Amino acid sequence: MAKTIMATVVVVAVVVAAMFEGTRSLNLCDMDDDGLLACKPSVTKPNPVVPPSPKCCKALSGANLTCLCSYRNSLMLPSLGIDPDLALALPAKCNLTTPADC
Image 1 (cartoon, one colour):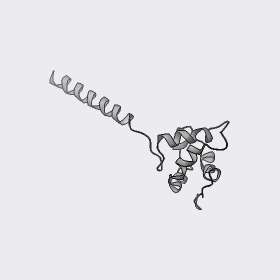
Image 2 (cartoon, helix red, strand yellow):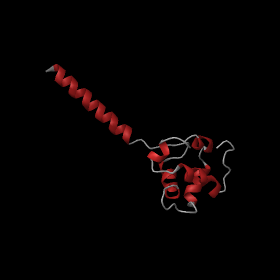
Image 3 (cartoon, helix red, strand yellow):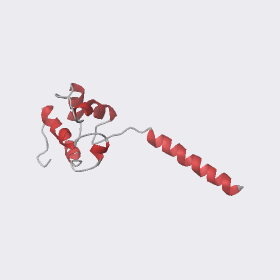
Image 4 (cartoon, helix red, strand yellow):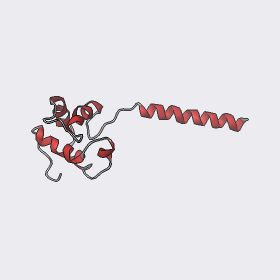
């Protein structure tokens, strides 16, 4: 009986922890959820929105572009529905300087 109660307590603790973890917002290279959502129409195939919205460019201006470049060959961006080539073209479209090593 004690083992069943202990197992139940552990399961409940894991579920509660997962719920709180799921409510945390995504922050990618100093871009928060709002910034990522503002830019998503411009980095999603097959019909990306051009030019990017002013809200997207504002969010991108505060982002760590060197960090974003590090995701060029990562599966992270595609898993979020973001095309890496379109994402790396955004700084120029927002009149921002793309890092030289990007």
